[in-house]
Image (cartoon, rainbow, N blue to C red; front, side, top):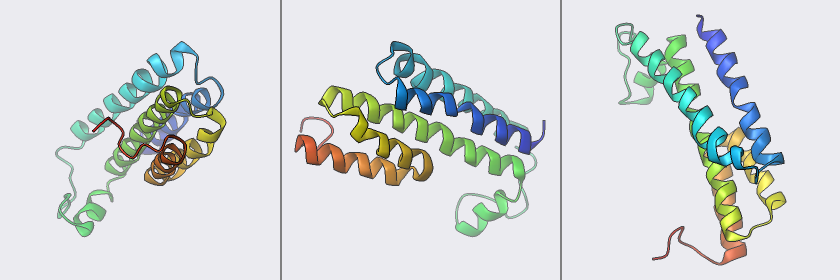
Length: 146
């Protein structure tokens, strides 16, 4: 299967999860199975498969020790796709955490929706936005009691 096809399939696989987080956050299957387990787990398996399939194809000079080594590694389209899947899986997992945490904290869901958008599009920026929203509403700096 081509890296392009894997990229498109995985990119599309996350969309139902994000739509459920936005429009059906309290449905038991949304955070209980689909977005916290099923989709990230499926992406994780594809990720593992890509790395195993490319174990002997690492470009000369590639690695994870510097931006230059990473750029060389990502010249392999399968490793670049694996990197993209890493973002897809973790951003969805973080979005799921934001929704469940907001429910526990009593934060209005529609205030969380912009955070979800930014988590989908810009990962850490959306997470930071959620943490700021959470602090403003709950006045709690720590995620867990100190």
